[in-house]
Image 1 (cartoon, rainbow, N blue to C red):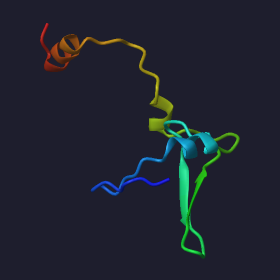
Image 2 (cartoon, one colour; image 1 turned 45 degrees about the vertical axis):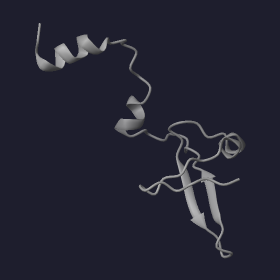
Image 3 (tube, rainbow, N blue to C red; image 1 turned 180 degrees about the vertical axis):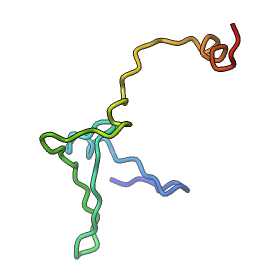
Length: 79
């Protein structure tokens, strides 16, 4: 399995790997290089009592369905 490094240094984790590690959007992962020079990726398990940061706490919370024109009018102070 291979993937390509983008100009920003990003890669897509292949679906087979995401499924094996049960990774979902927003999951934290830890990267390391072992003594043989191989990449090791692990899912970071949340500790009991973990307090999410402000971004974690807000992720996936928007339930208001805005129409683009209405949102832009609001942001521009129109109407």
